[in-house]
Image (cartoon, rainbow, N blue to C red; front, side):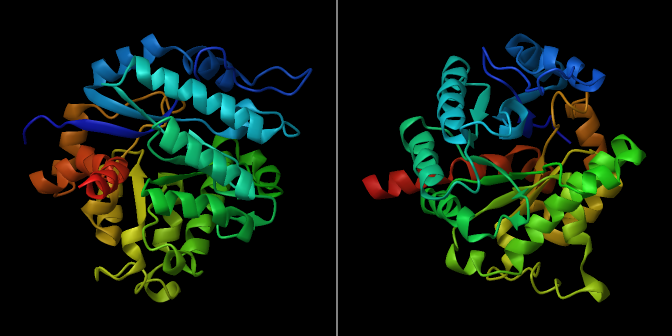
Amino acid sequence: MSKLDIVDFHTHFLPEGWEVYRAPGRPLEPLWARIGTKISDIDALIADSDAAGISRRVIGVALSMVAAPDADLGAVSRKLNDDLAATVARHPDRLFSLATVDTFGGEAAAAEARRAIVDLNLSGLFLDSARGDSLIDAPEARPVLKVAAELRVPVFLHPINPEPLSTQLSGLGRLGTRLSRGTINAAAAISLVTSDVFEELPELRVVITALGVSALALTGPFGELPSIFAEAPAGKRRHLYIDIMPSEARFIRFVTSLVGADHVLTGSDWPILGHDPTQDGLAAAFEAAGLSAHDAELIASRNALELLNGRHRKRDRLIA
């Protein structure tokens, strides 16, 4: 298998001047203290990318990572998106960026999403998958999703720490954190495929994280999802993508068997997990998973580029 071109769809990065939020009077946990020293270091990001053989990264920021619970999320989003656009402008050959908006902010958030994509030329939306009792299919999230569908940019549904589940599972340590976050990410995906969102917004494309893979596992005899992930072009499968943070053959086989290699992306969760998918490591995992060279190329970069370039193809058709 030839050298892979890798586009990492799941990278966290804070622009210059931004820091990881911490509650007043409370120190950062050791893990986040370590992450906080690297997550805004562009030299470290580029160096790690070069070492792994990653040609381009898709950076994004969760609002909860930088904003206090009572912050003006609209104001935070506007400033953050301006700074993300400036970061990409300084490294256009290495970075894409997703715009951060308040998922449940209604028309005001939709206006910021449109500004970030049209005026700032950002490449998609980075959204929280839930808030309180609301999942991504909630009416207040629909205006933001409509903008993504209209402009043909991908939506990356990122996990949150859902309560009370996060507290209930806190005794399990980091495994409990991943389990609670994966559960809410899976629930968000299921809410989309079991609602009318994709019928209303046929151009919407949504990426969920590897933590949300249980949404795909609930197929077969356990539910009504086989038809949702059917191979037919009209099926809802075509709306959903998943990133493979664990670059392991068994996980790759499982995900591609459910949604197809054309709906799987490479992701690292940099710098949170502390390791990157390397060219040699990813190629070995793809080979062990039994993928063809064509499917390996799709997952490594082509699927991501296809999603990210959707709005540009639409613009070119309109001009023609």
